[in-house]
Amino acid sequence: MVLFSASLAAETEMPKLVLQLTVDQLRGDLPTRYRDRLGEGGFRYLLDRGIHYSNAHYQHANTETIVGHASLATGSVPAGHGMVANVWYDHELGRLVYNIEDPDYHLLSAGAGVDKKTEIDPTLKAAGVDGRSPNAILASTLSDEMAIHFGGRSKIFGVSVKDRGAVTMAGHAGKAFWFSKSTTEFVTSSYYYPKYPDWVKEWNLAKPAKAFANTNWTLLHDRSTYLFGDSDDRAWETSFPGFGRTFPHAFGPSDSKYFGTFLTLSPAGDKLTLDFAKILIEKEELGQDEIPDYLSISFSSTDYVGHLFEPSSLEGEDNILQLDRTLAELFTFVDKTIGLDNTLIVLSADHGGPETPGYLNSLGLKDAHYFEPDKMDRAPAMMRLKQRFGISEELITKYYHPYVYLNRELIAKMGLEQADVENAVAAELMKFRGISMAVSSSALASNRLPDTLLMRSVLNNYNHKRSGDIYLVFEPHVFINDMDGLEVAATHGSPWRYDTHVPIFFAGKGIKSGKVHRAVTPYDIAPTLAALLGLKPPSASIGEPLREVTGN
Ligand SMILES: [Zn+2]
Image (cartoon, rainbow, N blue to C red):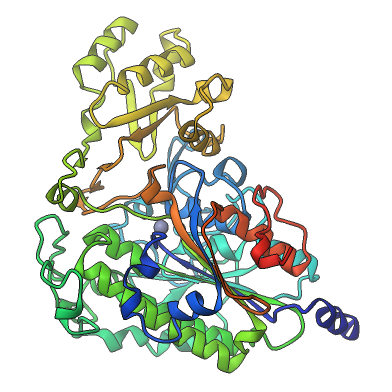
């Protein structure tokens, strides 16, 4: 068996490790925006030695983290993999649910779950339990297909600060670890392990995060060299108490309640992720035999920095330059332990991200503004509509991006047709300033909508069990900035180009360098990897192998 496997690997020139990197909210233009100041061996390695797709766009409307990660993992749109939003309303449970929450499992560390008092990610606050699993992902992932193809002998891991960034990529067959902001440890759930592997226990006991205590996020280079060096203090940036709006950003003492959070709002979160991943590669002996292994690392800092400060900020600029150094350190380590020539690297992002209305307004893009969704149900037009249907109670029970949820019980009780009410509400919502399109789910299900790119992206997002009643698309540069009480600077999640645009790089084993400008999609990544490894594509995959990578 071993001999057979060895010769199989040699014949097909398998990589020893597939290293799938995801940078949360890395918009397609960002790797090259500060090109002249990139160091050696990070993005420059990918740009000079790899294939760079500069025109890759998602084709689903809700460009959020779980949706993008699941799409990278499965090569499919949400209609196929089922992850339609970070949070959706579960009609059976009668409450909002967080994408990968699972009551059948629990976190292996007590007290490491979401602390609702200090958690700033509103989607995590929607979780009803601390257990996590990939069971809500309805399709197989590339990593699952590796497990199936290689008889369960591929080692498969996913690591990220965000649970959803780790669990998605590890798939149903791999193991996932993510960062607890409460304890600053990397944790996992009982889905994956009955107890922690020794090396994880040791890493956590050593408390590496403490090295950042009472230090600051400071600029990597001299301030005068930065594009945004003169504009650190801007009114629209989020001024998180203790962390502030300007450099240096203080992490504070390790026992302060926001210490773990502050680490994730800066390049420190990525550095800790890298440190954990390096130990994982070593202790789990990844890439050391002829059966290809799989490691996904999803770096989350770029997303948090984007939300708080926006990509076009001094923080955003410094974060990219620091991410470049983190990648260089990772590639050097992989070269030393496995060899870059034995490793197939792919880097992309789960979504792009926008600039803030404040910055856009200052440059003359005056339409950019924040939208207040709370007012929808009480707007005069909506009141008239409710009168027409004879409804006095709340008709819109919930707006949770991207879906409006109607009061289905009330509609049924009044003897009204759900589709009629959905379409009437959608028609009214479309008259609101700032709303570009409101598409009812019954209209999507009936498939009687115009065949436009935008409409197709909403349809690609539609899953009849999970999608809400009306999909809301705001105009370009119109955002909701209230993240459950915390006002942030920038929010992604739209079908517009700044949110759909991501980079794709392939590098390492067998890859010849090149730059490709033709339109491709991130759904192509999983089928490309499958083709290179000789696997069947993931079950719901819609992408096609990229010919510059596969060689034909
Ligand atoms: Zn994200």
